[in-house]
Structure formats: structure tokens, C-alpha cells
Image (cartoon, rainbow, N blue to C red; front, side, top):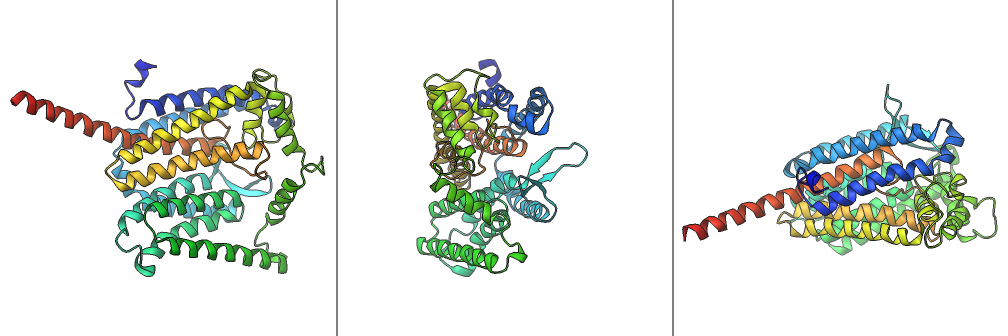
Length: 393
């Protein structure tokens, strides 16, 4: 590992955790895909090979990005935002549907799919960080500062919410957090939250009054998930996946059933993604689950540490946004599997099977590592200057 790390810049702890998780994801994905084999056919090796390709692409993206100067991330952030909007609009009209949600874009010729919201999440965090720096002196003004910062967030979240309410809500909350840290006036943020709630209620009422408009096609699904969460012990059939997820955690006990020996994963429709944590605990146990949580917390700490050490506020905001995004996704997956949250589609970063989510996570970590690499170079140059001054003296 040490011989490998000498070729990698940035934070070595982040590199080690990332590589360990990606390597472990190959084992867990191979073990957790029996349900996918039953539904779509093929063999576990087929999905393992597909996931391996995504892992290699993710590592390559992270390595390539971490060698670039983070100033280029800021310069390309506006282009990234417009590209995200274009992808979301394309998905809105021509997206491929999976589980009644049109969130995916099918890549021609290769047969792979890409979830445009995965790119949009990172794009808006980076672009928002740039806007907060650009408008920092006029954030108290509605027209010149506040609206130019908020409108891009509303556009991205508005385009995502139709088919993925949980992602839109989480992303909106993360952006509000970044804006609060960026010293956007609290009363203005509160007004946006109130306006957003009112707009959502209006959309719900309009959908119910004129269902032929199909304004919120997944509204019934959202309502059922909330209702099922409140009454999960009254209808075993309807709440089968939620109950099986909790039963899998119970079966895992302290040490787990062992790799490949989990039983409930064959009845969880997204054992390799949305219900990853349940499958993980069943096979590896609560002690391993504690280690997993600890790894995510260490990852968050290192990312935040890099952000706090930066003398560039854009880099600080980006690191905070990426760190919160990763921890939030992991936390929601755990809370859904334990029955605290209603069933929703948030997978485990770096571990769950999935192409665009994994690649975008590696891209985000590559940005963090480029910032860390810049700090290391600055520190090295400073120490070199100090040594030269001492030598001259």
C-alpha cells in the first residue's frame, strides 16, 4: 500500500479508505445480486464484471482529477451546471424508466445507463460554492445577490423532484446548509423554505385536482411509502421489503452469517443498492457495521479537515458540500434499512452497485484530493523557503 500511495497525492487516509471500500464493494456486490439474477437473468459474474468496470473507471477519474489544479473546477463549474440542466431536461422527456421512475439516460452502443441526477448533485454544489464567493458582498440584496445564488438550486431540485423526491429534498437541504455557512441571511433562507413547502403543497393539490396533467407521477408512491412506514406492522405483504430489511439486520447478530450466506438478500429487491446496509449487516454482523460507520465518519472528518485548512473559501464550501452529501446518502440508506425512514432510493457511497453514483462519488473525492494536494505543495514550498532562510542565516 505504501508503494502505491507514493504515486498518489493528497490525503493518504482518504485514498486508503476509498480503495478499501471499492475493493470490498466487489465482494459485496457479487454476494448481494442473487435477486437481480432472478429478475433479469444472467449470472453473478456478469454483474461483478460490470461493477468492476465502473470501479476501474471511478479510480481512473479520481486519479485524473486529483492531479489537476482545483482552480479549473471553479472555472468549469458554470459549464457543469448548464450541462446538468441539459441532462435533466433530456431525462425528463426521454429518460429510461426503471421501477416507474424515469431517472436514467441510456448510453448508446454500450447498453449502460447513467442517472443524470448523480451528476447534477455534484454540479450544483460546486457551482453554488462559486456563486457564494462571487456574490459574497451582495447576498443581503434580493435581486443582485440572493436570487442569482438561489435560482440555480431551485432549477436543479425542481427538475429532479418529479421522479426522485428524496434526492431533491436532500440536495435542497445540503444547498441550504452551504448557503447558511456562506452567510446568506437566515430570514431569506427561511422565506425560500416556506415558499418551497407552499409550492410543493400547491403542486400536490393541482395533481389531485387535475390528475390528467400527471404533474407528479410518483405522488401515490410517495404517499404509500409514508403510510406504510407508519403502519409497517399491519400489512405484511405491502411492507415486505421494509420488514425483510429489518429482519436481515436481526439475523446478522454480532458477527453475521458469513459472506454469501445471507438469506434475506434474496427477497430484498435492491439488496445491492437501496437496501445495501441490511444485506451488509446480515452477512458481516453488527461489529462490521460499526466499523463501516466509523469509516464514513473518518472520511467525513478528513474531507472537512481539508476544507477548513484551505485559505480559499470556494474550496472550503466544496469540501463541506461533498462531505455532507456522502454522509447524508450513507445515513439515509442505514435509516431506511433500520425502519427509521420510509423506503427511498439512496445507496451507499463507494459500496453499492451502480455506475453513475460510484463514478460521481470518485469524481467528488478527486476534487477533494486535488485541494489537499495543493495544500501539501504549498506546505512543502513554505518549508523549503524556511529551510533556505535558515541556511542563509
